[in-house]
Amino acid sequence: MRLDYKEIDKTKTYLITGAAGFIGYFLSKLLLEQGCRVIGVDNINDYYDVNLKYARLKLLKPFEKFISIKGDISDKAMIMKIFEEYKPNIVVNLAAQAGVRYSLENPDAYIQSNTIGFYNILEACRYNPVNHLVYASSSSVYGANKKVPFEETDFVDHPVSLYAATKKSNELMAHTYSHLYKIPATGLRFFTVYGPMGRPDMAYFGFTDKYFKGEPIRIFNNGDFENDLYRDFTYIDDIVEGVERLLSNAPTDAIPHRVFNIGNNSPEKLMVFIETLEKALSKTIGREVVFDKIFEPIKAGDVPATYASTDLLQEAVGFKPETSIEEGLQRFADWYVEYYKVK
Image (cartoon, rainbow, N blue to C red; front, side, top):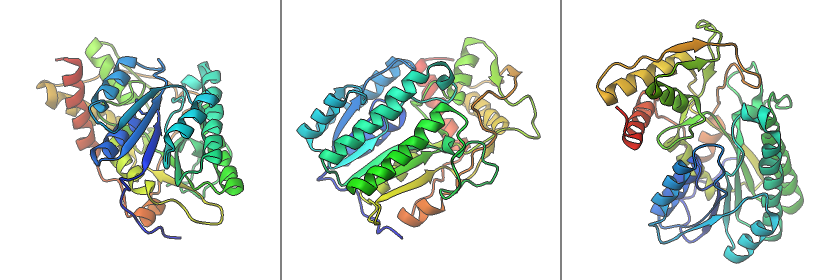
């Protein structure tokens, strides 16, 4: 069923968990710029450089309608208190323990945040009814799916990492709560989000860090350029526009739960992405940048390709991401050099 696209409702209160995170920051900023009231929750964990998280929050603080709360979604009493006090109309759950490879080292963090934390959000929505719950899933739920592009109706019962398993469990939990308690909920399967002020644990950011430290980068594709890894790299502005368009467009079906891909619908070979990043950095600093590359076998939990079908999203809210990797990586390169003062 097609959703009738509605503009963002500025009279509503928006609760965004993970507001100091990459997507959370940009979404909060977009809503605040339109005059919305935003309650931002984040535990500022040290999975990556907390200074970057504080830098994002600092840019949100001048907005009068922004309320920042330091807290962890795995703390049920705190979450219930926030819902009771601020009575959010629309909830966007972006707080999660991110990263596929880190889930091999620290599984506890994923269960605590992604499973227990999300359960607490669902419980809070159950007892404090909301107009719409939007939550982050991930392209990782598709596992090593060979059929491309990935469609929301594809079989997703074979996750290849604990991170993917927790995201799949989020979708099942949301579906169940929607069915039982009529909570309008939308899950978003994000595909490799990148851009300025991004996550330092992401490959493009790590490659740039390594270059300026004079260190080689490690590429997990066995040096096989013919059968290189493909990724559906999606620029941050495209991601937040897609999310924003969905916020006021809650599902109204018998079971009010939906899942959408948000990806670029245009996968790139990893090596092409790396070469484009080299060119972007070269342009920013005015000299040729070539990474020193070490090729290694693909890591456990990684998948050979991600490729989103965005037809459902386009049909629902008339939106399809369009930012090219050349444009997106140039913006990242310009930001990185300015932010870290490197040459």
